[in-house]
Length: 390
Image (spheres, one colour):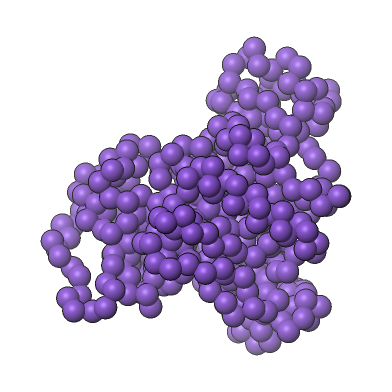
């Protein structure tokens, strides 16, 4: 790894700060872009040579546990995360030597489904019925205990629909557990939700809280396809989401940024599905809705800058752009980027990643004067993309 300069600050510039980021993907890229106008430069530790954030941040091309890389991050004013599956050893070596926001304790809870659910319950948040599966002895009766229909998920490392198996009465739960590698899992009971929603919340070092919008999300095959603000939820449900976010952020003593994902039941009750200790795919729409973005707020929270709520000023949405099949036997091709750009109210965000089927390559933010106009524009974006994206 190339040794960094001992002092790379721009002497004399106002409010110059340096923010370290564990991970260099698209979230880090967008954090770095939001940080620069605040007088903040970002340093990312990321083993991928083609990390998207290399384009607008100092890229430490090394393992997350690399001694020189961690030493460089310790010289930053604060360090944050772009994803939760960083090695524990990396955060251990940073803890106490540089402000790590969110702190390792939050990561310890959010990266392990069973610990997370127990901690959410302790904070007063409702969750779907669940059972921890760690040994063969945990399997008998577990499916009946969660209502007979459920999803078996690995306790760690699963994302975008990976590391999970759906099970129902009559299925061999032991076989499903074996298929996931017989690793610690959580069996979650299916709940009859009417929609999935999410909300980001930031908390500063002084305990000040900043809330994002309640966003309505649509998933297919375990991958988020689109997010819409405002959600179809009632004002009471939106208030409930803020109340739960506050309770979790304060109970977990969060400093930094977290995102809560919810199941909304028919009566408006919210159950927390999971917590991400970082900015979130569903919050990308805040980039173009006329208010402050989730990325700016996350930078502010990590460095102790003043916070404000980041609810968009206009109805807005986000549509993910996924990689398309290539090669013999397929007639799909690269999207018509110009056609997307021509749709009124659209803002194209590409991550500078090579194409791979199903990979998140970018997103389109869409803005409208009304929710109805917004949804019509979203449909046009989706029709433009569906020629290659299934």
